[in-house]
View (cartoon, rainbow, N blue to C red):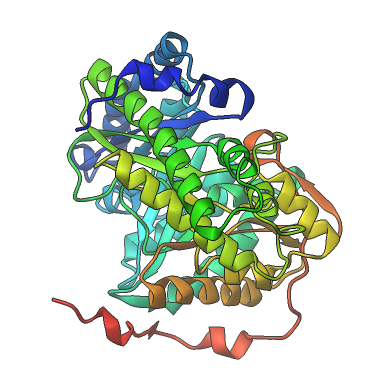
Length: 456
């Protein structure tokens, strides 16, 4: 592990005070395999006891580190082993899984975290009976809990894409939207569909504790779009080489802050340090926008010709800078492009410069995918599945993580605004193609793994 001196953090004071640099999350990953029981009551009791026992000091520790080092630590979160695996022996119905979701929500409230991720299933090779029960339980689970986040991995480069799961997720997203329609379909903001899901991602809604990990781990996500934008402004008009080096050096500094916080949190909690995720994750705050980075690079707004190239440069240099700063960079690490959480993206979507098709192209070079996108409430389940399938294909073919967090806002249409609140922000409802894909989505089975997946 790299040694990080506190003097390095003092050099970032201006970044913290003026440019919105923060540690976005300390996420405690907790393995739940030792909680497994074929008795649902016993399972729920064990899950509650383990989470509250291990995470009892998480929030207080994060707050103490933030005060001591002068670094804003915005969120404290928990990720757990995918619940489809943990509940398989005890759950005989979707309602049984919902009971686990409510237990998780109660445990999260007891320790004071703002999100808990891992109400999840990994089905890229196919769904077990327990996987399907959990997936079908998602609408009720997310509509009857407060901070539970759900993710389903439906594809990977090694396995291909489980199109039965893709079809089911289109239906589940619609039902989740209906179940939370009084809150602008907020439940869908806590539900993400993955290809090549990483085991160590500390960000929500997609975080879960990987099945090959130990009993517990501390992963930290650090973010600083405002810092990167300010650095780029200092080399306005310079060559691409100068631009690239500037981004890389800035990412190095930001990662070192994350390394310090992660190491300190791991030491104080007595839990192994896992990874630092350096992701330019925007917030609705002014000056905290990835879209603004793209405009500072020379575009009039996000979505203009050249946007994908600019984002590719940004993403690659962020990763390079992070890898120079720490041997423990992991998670997603790169640039996020959620619409609702980024004021610049919202403005570009409203002006018409940014559409779903352009966002899809951008996801081929960024770190996540179609993220926090509000679509018309009458969008069919088949169309939602088609959009998911397209995004999964980009991840599968390119060997990268992609995701879809789509929000069909019930009762609203193109041009209306959905309001989610807090870090989730607000979003204009974007146009979706009216061309149909029903017969394609009705096919059963899997899209086979690509030819370049055969590596040994």
